[in-house]
Length: 556
Image (cartoon, rainbow, N blue to C red):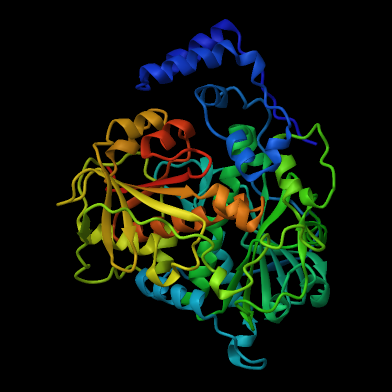
């Protein structure tokens, strides 16, 4: 059981925090909310409730308020956790140096990723690609979440995937089955040393396969499990850290999918599996430290095999959740999958091609704007984009071209992946795009056109709802990821909120890398006032709500 320390503010602390927020341009309504929040501070301690076990309930339990923004600076009352796990005395396998040069361009890698997503390769046993080499695995791991060095002026090392506050909750485990030069077994990827730590010798592929609905995982050369030490984020961000960890899981997973596809290695991802079985197998306690996504790489990877096992959410199985848990723990525990017949047949995996899109996104009827095609596809390699990716501290108030915007849109919403991304609606806030009026837009992947949602100048209002962060107004464009929360829950069950956040992270990572390929920069702005941002773009916060925001532009 965890407890997030939330000391009460005395009058001096409250005054100091109000002074710190004086530079935040608050509207009258926001200021009144702030006053009422402070007045109610003693009554607003997060309490476990049944609402925390539902997709919409956990979204509301982790939203930012002005009180939450004030409290962030006061939660740092415990020592930060180590950035890596120790595993003292365990055997280690060095993965050697990984060259950063070479490989296909980001544009080519994205095209291959799209093809792989639509029709994964399924090599026959004994073919060259059926067995993964240790060097291939080392490359995949490094460009998935490896140590890419220090940024300019940064005191800490950075990784291949972005992280909230550079706290890096994400951890990688490898279940190696057919990796040349590596014994079968379970390994932990030590990012700091670029080594594999032997967690367990040997691997029962049949037992692992029981954690999935299909038998597709058994043919993989290796399973790459992305786990999260949630407390690394919660020490700073409290319950909202749960969101950030899952979004970062999407960032990490998308790197793996792109690098795998660029290398000709089959890759298939799962976010729905028997949680307790896999957590136990990896030696994780399952609450503070838990598996969040799995990718099968190499070997024979199935895209969608027949359902041979059925799972039910723990919260729908009649299992009672302890009442004294924090909302995020209650939700994560209740949304675990267990073997059993689902209470509602529409919950669970997609069972037919016609269910690939459980709901269609409404296309606005506004004016359509064709985007210029790039004169030449960006030639910067995928590996260089990942290794050099950085989040700028400031953006220059400088316009980008419609061709650059088109490349960003194609990365966020590739037309060939339209059926893969079903839980997220993407909107664009255009501040500075040559020949495009400021406003809110939708993007039509198949037509490669923008559609006006609303003409408006968001250069002042967007920073205001992003807690005064000037980056939200100085960047050229913002990519908003809106979760279709209620419909996702109705179709996929309450666990769908995990899927929404992971998918948002995948989209955000493609935007990051597209910006790098275009000699631009991207930055996630996850600190925003949820209700205010939803109101700004016309979302109701329950049916539709912003879950992620990535800004793109030139650096100052």
